[in-house]
Length: 314
Image 1: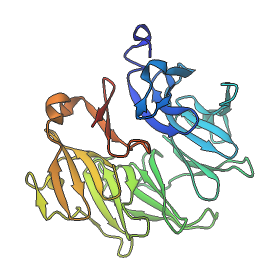
Image 2: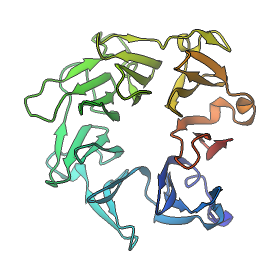
Image 3: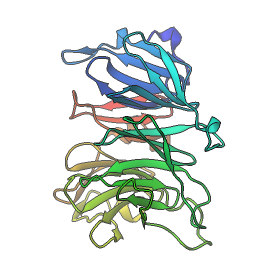
Image 4: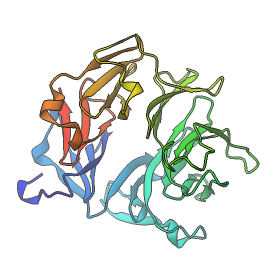
């Protein structure tokens, strides 16, 4: 990016995604950028602005086209002409949401596009071009915020809310959801059981990792229990028992996370925790936002976003 074009908003990186044709997609508070690939890295000097002004939350390429989640709703992006078309604004539909923000997109194995919003999860079977919403009910939910969506190997869907995880076995209208990590105590602070990320280190495992407001948790799908990830050896006293946040799977068996004072990697294969040496000196944890998924072209690099930009750890 040209130095004269840089500002606080387009340096606030919210999305990094690999695209074989466009290169490294960089979503910011003020637009979407693309950086071409070089043989051993990226050609940052040739970074181009694909979409201006919009706050880019997510980008999903589907058989029906490329879709972008923004603060104004869902847009379709034509990668050939670079034209942008507004597809959906949920505040102007029969659902009458208070705001049109779409926070995350996920295309599942059945070509169903899932959308996470501040007022529930919505899914759109691309074959029918029709939307259907899933909205929480009951006193356990004050809002319909959906922070994360994850599909299990059996095709069922988990999604993270302000109060735990909802498990939907199918898209049938008669399906009864199952709830995990949910508080029923009205005296609890609302949002204390929020789930921001959901992932597995083995898609066929009974264990699912949850990045929550309370830190990293482990969900056992067999007995529905929630526990702290087991630790046999750690560079500091077990950090899962204290404040920790921003957990992100960075390769098959490793999860990066941060605490109030430092950055760590949890190895699930041997249940050990090690410090990312020197990172806290370069980027104080107070400035860090969260770890990001690794890039297919550079799987050994660790990415972390901050309030200033994003950091590449070699």
